[in-house]
Image 1: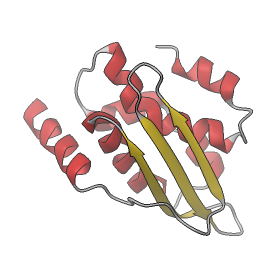
Image 2: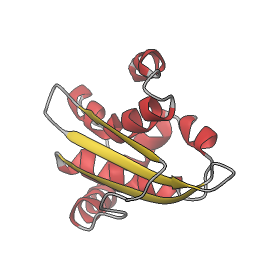
Image 3: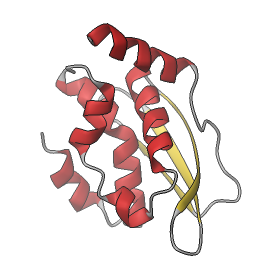
Length: 134
């Protein structure tokens, strides 16, 4: 089973879904992981009901952070921003499907960190710190 997840991670890291910044966009936020230097920028287009209609992202980092961003981007399309804010870290880690060291968990969660803090207009740092505690 772990081999299947490894292949999925490699596929998403090599063939990134929704790669590229959206311009124009309705959401644009970026964050970094200070432990490893991974960096991610996420852009979204929203309709009048705050439903995510398009996702775009770019960044630099390890295969885990890049694959996680690609996987998250696929999930976001069709959700409202309020629904996206409630994505659970465990849900994202289950998508990765591998046991990760604490440093790799932070890599995997970087896309969700960008989403959560950005979705709270930068005021989500407190929520993120609570959210990030493992």
